[in-house]
Length: 378
Image (cartoon, rainbow, N blue to C red):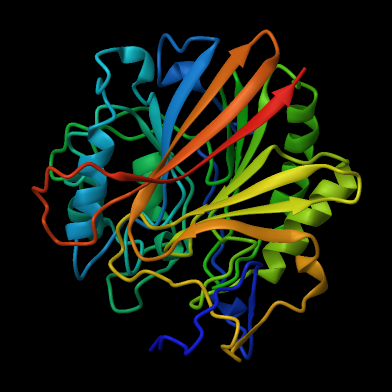
């Protein structure tokens, strides 16, 4: 159990959690794609009439909860306040991008009704997703099923239709072409990765090759479109539960180096808190790594204290990475806006935290806990 240290001076860098067992044996084979290579989904197929000069969307991860769904319901209720809150549809989020762990503790079809369809029954926009490690896990005590069977039925269907295990929900299945896939939008290319079941993630060689090609293709669309990478397992983190994922750092930074292409921002979940980190590269480029995994699971993950000897930041891969801000004691979600002007694109994010009480009907608005803006000049 986490104990408050005497100094409780928090790390301002990513940390590595020592003495972690190797659980790579948990790797699960990937399901067959539902669409054709290179697994692209144009946003206008699910969101008609997207303007070319502004796009607004929500982002959240790790929303499910078996033990206590109260916080998930609070987060959804606060996201609903963002629709027409200013009396104009221009500020309405056009979709929700889920960063994984839709359900706990295993990716069973029986959990989707209570952990996904009911909480989001009033959410008016489409929901797309990448899978988390819990979505990918198989419950050995249940009737046999394959990893991601339920996730692909909900998010990777060949057409929108009623889902048999949704409890007759109005929300239909999403038509993502694969568990790793690219969302094409007028102002950004979202490359969504699948990092599988182990605690620190695993990416197949086939997906690695696909990812490098997607980075190169997305780079050709600059400066008219931003490049956004989404992955469930957080590469950089300062939390006490997971810490940073060295395999995901090596995977991402290796792909960036081999292609010569870096994204404008990397979003992830897995860690149950909010963190905004920035890496400065030797060529002067700066990339934000944003963790947004406080979407509803009742257990939050505090940022580690410097005098906690279970962690270290003396890892070469952490060089020039700084933790700029965090929120580790409240649940919350991101609202992101991409705007096009004559000067170029800007990606501006706002992280909203909710009161940490179990008052589902609370009228208290979410609190703006952090904001950032990335300017992408032409």
